[in-house]
Image 1 (cartoon, one colour):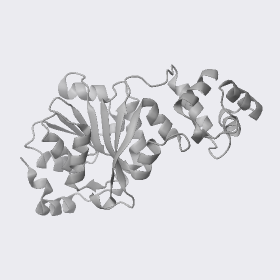
Image 2 (cartoon, one colour; image 1 turned 90 degrees about the vertical axis):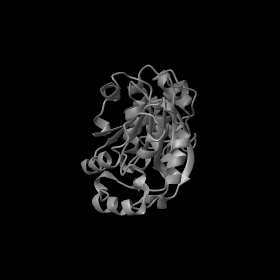
Image 3 (cartoon, one colour; image 1 turned 120 degrees about the vertical axis):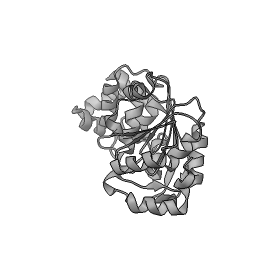
Length: 280
């Protein structure tokens, strides 16, 4: 098997021939201990199917393959795809696909490689600049993952797991679909090139069904975004601005939901957003 991916000699080759592309937000993970922590968190077994987004130079891909499970590695950079296919050629359980994950249908992907649609896990070092779109792509899919273990920017991870008092549209959106927890902090020195910020390993356990019984998700998230339209202002004014109604009408709506019009959007829990949804 190709253990040379981790050798100093091969590292020089990879750096020379696969320069990180700023346009794709590439920061290659190089710390094998961090990789092992990701694997432990994901609790990979040979029975799992794993989708890895942005495998980069393949340090995580190779360790996933060693768990003897099927791995679909999706990489948008054609140069990295060529390198991965060369360096990981000895692993029969890895399928490497050049594609944009945001344009990829998950069900069709699984059916293409395994002729069936089976439960799967997402394990990835996600590019910072598309963290939210990638998470939403999987969590909003008709075929949601069993588990997501992803590397994200520390500030983004903290925003995702925030509780009432520090909520944002991002935290509401992720927590609507699953339970996120930060596993551990990952220092910037664990990457090449070194990013300006630290990262975290984030675990998201998707719910079989959302924890609030929303039957119109589009409407629910319109309300959330309206509430956050002027986040520093009181809900009375935020909803007036975001929904195009008078402050008096916004206050009446909030009163029906049992929520003070003087509160701010960041203080609301998911259940309180649902209360507003039910009276709108």
